Length: 65
Image (cartoon, rainbow, N blue to C red; front, side, top):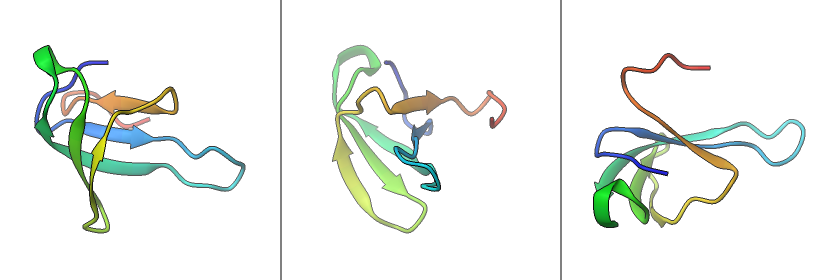
């Protein structure tokens, strides 16, 4: 997984009915775009994340799915 500041981190819902959480990557702390990332979510919450298999990175030029 590689990201740059301004990309979106999408944490997919793990159970039926749980919505995806989308946050903006505000800081990349790993080398060459690798985790961990500082992420600001839509509700204003900020977290330091080392994303697992339930997460994807969405680059600004990519369409939303």
